[in-house]
Length: 519
Image (cartoon, rainbow, N blue to C red):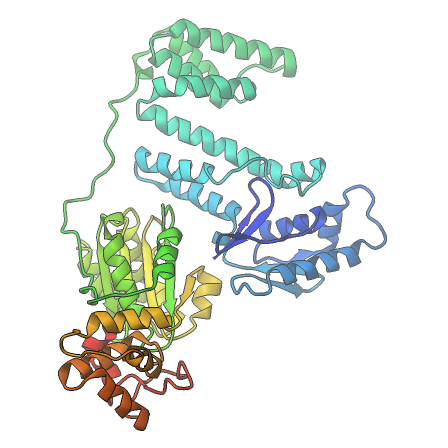
C-alpha cells in the first residue's frame, strides 16, 4: 500500500519502504499535487508555488523534469498515477493514501459521531497523523504558510474539538496541564483560554479561572487592541456568579448497541497447515492497530492455498476482531444477495428485502460502522462485485481471496495485495510429510522431493497426491506412475506453476468440489 505523508516532512512509503522523492523542489511538486489529489494543477501554479518571488526562465522545464522523476519513483506502484491533463498535471490515487485527506475524513467522522467517547477516539487518531509542521522541508516559509496555514488551523480546531469532548466527559483534572501549555503557546485563541478557565473552575479553582481571564484580556488589549469575544465574556461572568451550569454533566458511558449475538462464521481451518511464515507475518504487520477500514486481497491461481491461508490467519487473529467474523463465498452470491446475508448476520433491525443495491450497501456500512470485525470474502471475481461490501468507517478488515488481479480494487479502493507463489521446496516436503503417515507410506530418499516437484509445489495438488498415497499406494509407486503419465491429474491452474508441474489440480473436476476450496 502507498502512503503519501504531508503532515510533517513530505514522505512516501510503499509497503513500509520509504521511497526516494529527490530534492526539495521535487518533493514540493508531489505535495502540491497530493493536496489536490484527483484534480488537475496547472503548471503555472506549480511554478508560482515553487518560485514565489522570481521564477527562472527554465521553471516550466524544471517542473516537467520533477514530474518525470516522480513518475520514475512511483512507476511500479499501481495505486498512484501521475498524468498530464491540459496545461498541468494530476495525481490520480485514492485520497485515503494521503494523510491530509485521511485527517480531514476522520475529523468529519468525529463531528458526526453519536457520542463523545467515539468523537475523542476519532480525533486522537486524526491528530496522531501529524508528525510536525505540514510540508516541512519542502516548501519555503511563505509557501508553507500559503499551503499549510489552513491545515494548521484545521489541526488546532480539531484539537479544540477533542478538548471540548473531553471536558464534557468530565476529564477536567487530566486536562489542566496540557491546557496551560496550549494557552501559553497560543495566547490569542480564545477557545483554548475558555477551556482552561472551565477546567480550573470545575477543579474548584475559580480564582485561577478568573486570573486566566484577566491575563488573556490584558494580552488581547496590549497586543491586538481587542476585547474578548462574547463566549469569553459570558463564561467569565458565569464564573463570577458561580453558575451551577458550569459544573460538568454526569459523564455518560459510551453508547452501547442492543445486545446481539456475535457472528463467528469462519469455516474450519485446514488440517496440517504448513509454511507461509512470511505471508502470515505480513498479514499481522499490515492489519495491526486498524483505525480505518482496510481491504487485503490474497491473489493467485487455483491451488496456491489462498483460502487456506486466509482462514488459518483469520482464526489466529480472531481475538483482534471482538465484534465478530463474517464469511461469504462470492462464487455463490452476487453483491445484492451477499448484502442480504451480511445484514442478517449483523441482526440488522431494518427489513432489507425491498432495498436496492445502493440502499442495502449503505445500511450495511451503517451497521458495521462502529464495530471491529473481520469479513472474509472468498472467490471474488471482479472489483465491482466486492465494492458494495466494503465498510466506510471503523476498524474492520475485509480479507479477500481471488484468482483475478483486482487492479481496480487496488488502484481505486486502496486494497493491499498479497500475491501467493507456490510453496518452497522445503515447505512442500514438510506438508507431504505431515499429510502422509510414515507407517502407511515409507519413503526412500528423494521420493518426497520428486512428488512435490511433480505437484508444482501447489498446496492443493500436494494434498491430492497425499490422499492418493494414503488411500492405495506408496509414494514411490505414485511418483513412478505420475512420471509415466504426466497428465493423470488435471489441475485447473493457469499457467502451470512449473514446467515439470503439469499436475493440474483436479482429478477431473476437483475444482468444483466445495470441500476442496479450502485447498
